[in-house]
Image 1 (cartoon, rainbow, N blue to C red):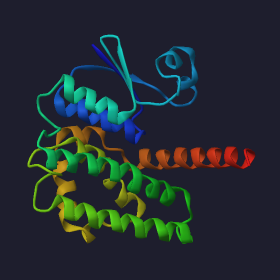
Image 2: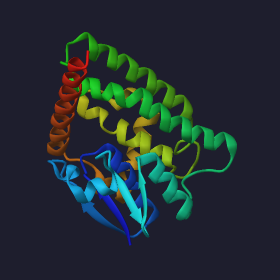
Image 3: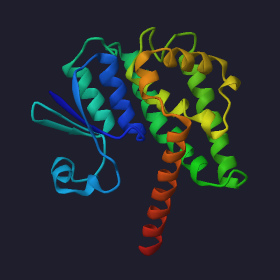
Image 4: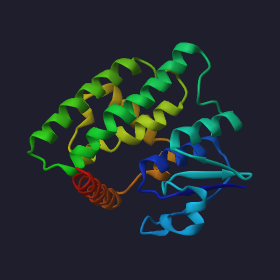
Length: 221
């Protein structure tokens, strides 16, 4: 059976978790507590970069969430979550990459920076730009590029659904708010959603990681 190494606090792990659940793929969950067990020998042999998520399927290892999602789609194609039509496929990929490159870094800034800082204000402006863009891309469809759930919805959904916890009201973006409500009606999304308490723990982990990375960057100057 496919093994899924994850922690529910990890947005990237929840992407894969949602893909597994939405596709109905049987799997064995392996919880990585992120308090040092990701640095232990057993896990390091699976992923020398110490990151989750990882899947091991019939002895085949895949790291990096987007690569894992593509693998799951290719090996378990029903229900289809990655369109073949060129423009729709491009839309799905575009939403995934904009989420990773434009939205998530700003979410990290909102978590780390003080609420009234210039950096937080800049992050909110950029998030507004992303959400306006996503509103245009979504259009009148139920999901990104399709009337059926795609991998783009999973990647974007993890990010966008976290925004109300950071003071960004989705009611300012009615189409995205309706889209997010459609997602949250799905059992897989209800199962994987973080509680308010869990989100606070996630924020503390993010702050600790940012502090550590900035300290290492300063030491390397």
